[in-house]
Amino acid sequence: QVELAESGGGLVQAGDSLRLSCAFLGRTFSLYVMGWFRQAPGKERELVAQITSGGSTYEVDSVKDRFTQSRDNLKNTVYLQMNSLKPEDTAIYYCAAKHISTSEFAYWGQGTQVTVSE
Image (tube, rainbow, N blue to C red; front, side, top):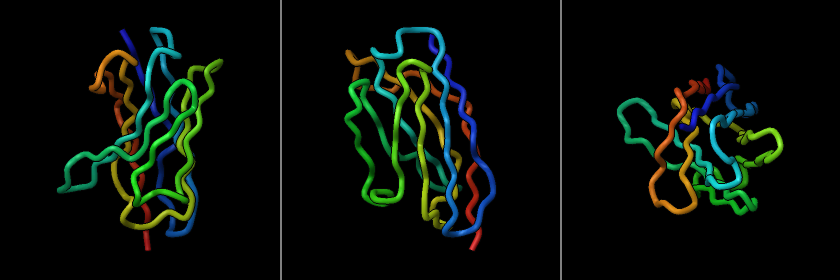
C-alpha cells in the first residue's frame, strides 16, 4: 500500500513563493509517476504537474515558468516549488501517485491548503 503525506501549504501574498513536499511511503518509489493536483472552491480538481522517475515533467500552461517540480529518489519525496503565486492559485493541493503500468492516479495524499491573498 502506498501512503502519501503533503506538507508546506500556507497563506501567502501574491508574488510570494511556497514549496510543497510529498513524502512517499510503502512501495518502490521509482516505479511511480508522481503528480500534483489542485482543487479550488467550486471547481473541479485539475492536474497541475507530474514527474516521472526519470525526471521528465509536465506542467499545465497556467503554472509553466512559475512552478517547478523535482523528485529525490533517495528520500522518496517530490517537491513543487511555486513562485510568483497568484490569487487564482488558491486551492487545496494534492499529491498523487500512479504505477508506471497504469494510467490512473490511484494513491492520494490528504491535501494541503494554499491561499494566496491580493
